[in-house]
Structures are given as C-alpha cells and as structure tokens.
Image (cartoon, rainbow, N blue to C red; front, side):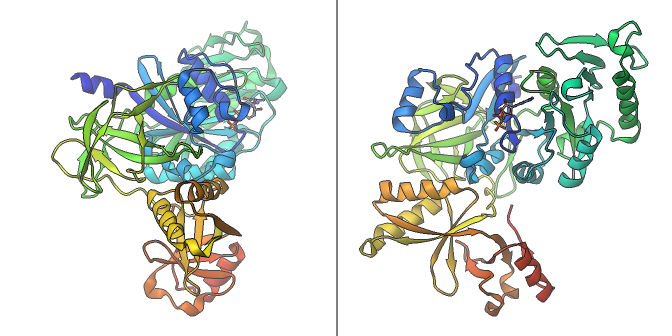
Length: 522
Ligand code: GDP
C-alpha cells in the first residue's frame, strides 16, 4: 500500500443526526473522551455556554465572530482517524445542516428512546437515505423510562422505511436498568449507575452462569425471551445491506451514563466505511486514493463581524493529498489559486493545516472566490463533482430594499448570496416580487446581516411563514391553477412551483387536479 492509501483507509468521516435534545452533544463528548481528547463538559456546545478554551484559534474565532469550533472534530481512535462533522440544529438549523450530509461517508442517528422518531431526525435521515450511505442508530437515554424496545424498532422500520438489526438489547430500563445484552459481541454489559460498568460472558446457549445475581432477576428471563424473539423473527445482519443504507444496526444505551457508548463506537468503527469514491457530472468516478488532489465546497461560513469580511469555505477532500500552499484549479472559472491559508479541524485546537487527505475536511479562508458546490482540483483533467441537491425550503419571506434609491446594491447582494448558496430565491409570477426561501430562520438573519455589511443594503423582510413547496412540470402548468392558498412562483432556474398554505391546501389541489404531478426536492 502506498502512504496515501494507508492514510486514506484510516479515515472515518461521519455526521451525527438527531432532533434537538436527543443527546447528540453528550454522545459526541463521550466519543472525544474515548479518542483521548479531554474536554471540559459543555465545550462542544461552547458557543452556547460561552465556555471557550483559550487557545489562540478560538480567540481569533471569538474576535472575528466565525465559530467553526465544533464544525469538524478530528481525533484518533483505535488506529482510525475520525472526523465528526457537526450538523447544527436548534436555532442554527439551515441548509448547511443538510449539505454537511453530502460530505460524510456514513451517519449516526441518535434517538431519544422515550420520544422515538422526531421531525428533524426524519428530515436528516431522508437525505442520508437518498445518498445510500450506512446509518447506525443509537437509542439513547436508556437510564430513563422509555418506550418498549420492540415498539421503537417497529417505528424506525415503518416511519423511516429502513430495516433494523438490534446489536444489543436492554435488560430493563429507567430505574430498573440492569444492563445490556450484547447480541453482537456475545456478552452482557452490567449497568452500574456510578460508572464502572462490567462485562459478563455468555455461554454457548446465550445465557449467563446461574450463580450470577442477574440470573435470578425476573428481568433476565424476559430479556432472553425478547432476544430470542428478535433473533428468530427479525432481520438478519447483512453487511451489504448496512453498506447500501437498507439496514441500520441499532444500539441501545445511555450517553449520559456513558453506558453502551464505547461498544457502540467500537462496533461502528468495524463497519463504518473508509472514504468512498465520488461521481463527477460526466459520470466518471474519482477514487479517494487517486493521486490528484480534488474536493468540493459544501459549506461557506461568513464572518458576522463587520470589520472582517472573510469567510471560511469548507472543503471535503475527495481524492489525493492536500498540501498547504498548493495550487489548484477552481473548476467553475478555470482560475488557478494558491491554497495557503487553510485550517484543519482538530478536536480542541485549530492549527494551520499542512497536509490532509481524502476524507478530511479543510477550511479555506475565502474572500469571495468560492460558491457552495464548487469543485477544486490539481492536474490537467477537468471535471466537476455531481451537483449538490436543491433542498425544499420551508420558510418564506418577501424581501425588498429599504431604500428604493439603492436598488443596485440590493440586486447585486441578493444575486451573489443566492449564487453562493446562502439562501434560495424565488420570483412571484404575478408581481415579480422577490421571495426568499430557507429551511431555518437563521438563514434569513444571516442574509439580512450580510446584505447590510457586505453590500451596504438594508433589507425589509416580511414573513410569509411556513409553506409547502411543490414543483410542477411546466408542461402541466396553467397559471389559473394559482390562488391565494397556493402561490405560484419560479425558482432560480425558472422552474415553476407552488407554495401551499398547508397540507390541506395541497390535498385540495391534488383532488382538483388529479393528473398534475407535484414534486418536492429533498
Ligand atoms: P443535543 O441537543 O442532541 O445535542 O442533546 P444534548 O446532548 O445536549 O442532551 C440534551 C439533554 O439530555 C441534556 O440535558 C443531557 O444531559 C440529557 N441527556 C443526554 N443523554 C442522556 C441520557 O443518556 N440519559 C439522560 N437521562 N439524559 C441524557
């Protein structure tokens, strides 16, 4: 194996998807601890709690207002180099959250076992599913009373349309939590509320020695019965199905009690794929171990400090090796550029990165050269990675310039921010109004701020609220189909779509025009 191959094969790049409060931060912190990265609890959410370590980079981030601290966390674990990409939720939910999933090779889905599948998990899951990447499930908060394990598996299968395979099974839950029956590793993990979880071996019948106290527990027999049931009636563990995203291995545990997390991480690392090949627009394939360096921009984070206009373009390296100071071609305009100001994402400190390989993420300081989806590469072969998908926005605003005399900067700003991928723009058929669409409120706030700071344009935004966006085949469109409850607009590429007031309005429309096909983006 070449040095590059060895380095690339060590990489495991993934994201954790979940609904707010399911425990993503807690489990991330546990993983960092296993990786030997000692952090004060709460630092993953540092921006929220205001607890920053005082490394220089973070000082810079703080001063400049660019928070990239938890965007990518890199650490070594059992011979692998792990990159965890953050998928911001809460008030930070935006298209960037979706796009981050374009840059990973697999995903971990964390679900609160008392709540089951929640809306944000479902949305993020669907993007992973579309990409066909492996998805591993952690059913969290087992130390609290949650729903029946069988019920949770059934819900995952029904609501998400993916097969499940339980890697372990709870022995009780909540106050009655005794441990985990580790089906995959053939052992029992005993739960001790104070930590120090211990293991018991299983005999050839899948039982434990009869003199173990747990053996006397009525819970034990129930667990054996349930395990037998899921083993005989459930799905088989198939590595192929895991790899194609058709089956998700499911782990129960408690992130807070650090119970089941290390076993989860170990098993996950056994299956999680190394960097996978990426397709180009002309259907050829770029292998991660190819000699030429290549990558694509999946996120641009703008500086919110008016004194510093720089931004950071996040690049997923798809092939070869990055070396600081190297010259690359920006495919879109065939411009050559030198990548001298780059940053890599260590778990705690940010350093100027010297080298990185396929699978890694680098951040490039950018003064306005990059757009989301851009391909960069070295070598003579000109290619572009597949287009990043357009997502279905859910929130809409009407936008106008506060000062009518400043139309020029208003138009320029909107055009550039839309091109960069910060927000989606639509035009109304009837009035030619500008309508902006986003998946999270934050996108509007960033837009407004950047319009003012970068383009000196004060904007007025009038909220239109939540809408259901559905595209319609232009051949089937009759403008008279539009009404106040289904606004007709066109997207950047002049494709027509309706913004439905609510689900009722969409159903009503479909009943009235049964032959019209309505489609969503992702
Ligand atoms: P995130 O929003 O998904 O990042 O969720 P957090 O990791 O911040 O967790 C949300 C809340 O749930 C916090 O109060 C955590 O302490 C708590 N929590 C996380 N994991 C567990 C768990 O396994 N058991 C219990 N009881 N609480 C947990």
